[in-house]
Image (cartoon, rainbow, N blue to C red; front, top):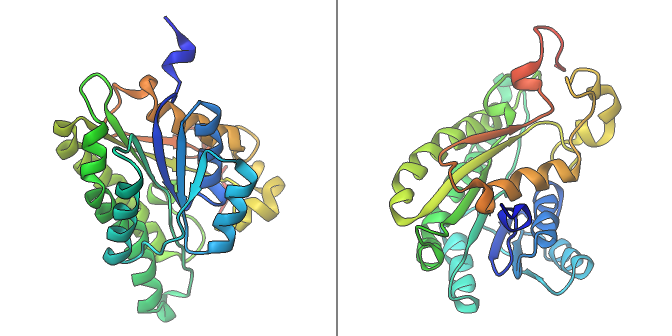
Length: 263
């Protein structure tokens, strides 16, 4: 058994949305380390995309794009199709969050989060269906990895109504997409991260030490933890896993005793 080959992405091309920072960037670095031939990243902010491309090297290609609309999803898919004959791996990582008091929660905060976290995930994958099927065979399936959150599985102490609803939707949507796309040899799974330092998870970024006491593993997540999870699902190693949500949270959801987790 060739373990290195099992986890290798040699010769494969990937797209990671929201890949310029945070969890997306962690995944990009993991894919590069596993030998991916090219990793496309996209995000709204052109300067952040350019900076990440410069830092990570020539195998990373940046396409600044707002994929919160169907037009943006279609434009990104068209751009990928103009550059590549096929796409082996899609990571739907781009996301947004919004917090506000229940009585003041705005429609804009609902729509922004649901549109990017759920609708765009579905329609970008749909728009890239041709590129994914061009790569997919029964022996080497194409992979879609959706980034959910443990906030789609458990309550937190913040009033992030649309965010928690959106991430629960991603988990269920992953199952339904997996059931349809498996016939095309496209395997769909999800990752539900816990506390990883990022601009979106400022609590983990700014107060990781305080959060660590409530996590069974005794620490917040590191880049290697996220990269390893995504690599498992994207590589041959994960070829018998379909429709699953892999929880990567140091045990908070499934191994924390009542009253021991963070609020």
